[in-house]
Image (cartoon, rainbow, N blue to C red; front, top):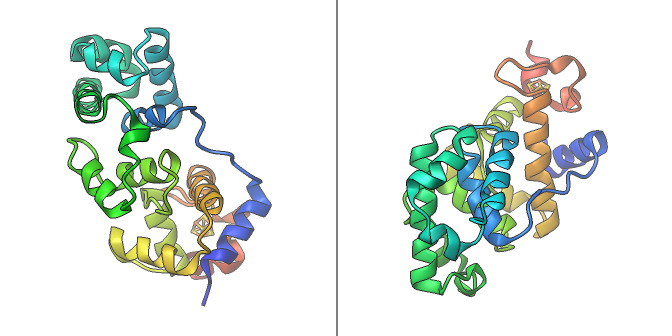
Length: 216
Ligand code: SF4
């Protein structure tokens, strides 16, 4: 039975270290996780840069902005009105409850409690919450995105739902924060370059261990 650590080692050998997340502060991670929903990271990064140039990439400033102002700046990320409302709402909650400090919010030691709090924000689903927990709060939580679901299914590792796949990763991987971050980034790299909706198995670094590839 193929083990996830072997998948990780093969991907790392092929792509090299990814060094995610390509933004600086925990608040930027949160903003980025919302902006990258249903678009590419490149578009999200351009929207982040626009917010930064406008001086809105910190909680108090974003909380004071209007959703219309924010929407105009993040247009490039798509679904911009919806995302703008979510960003402003989250920033206002952060300011009201934690004096604008994500570090204070992350002071909660119980990861489950923190996750429930993130999930209670409109527009924050399990994948977004878990990306924030991993990359901004340094919690051992593996985000399960569409690339991960597709890969697990094609490798023959599982076809379960979000929680089931997350348990699989948690049970098989060593408790290593940097490995979690790298592996998540490597899976996305594989998903963009090889394991797409129509897979490019010919030169994929997982071809030798992939059930889908051996059956086609
Ligand atoms: S061999 Fe094909 S199906 Fe398997 S992981 Fe690679 S691209 Fe995806």
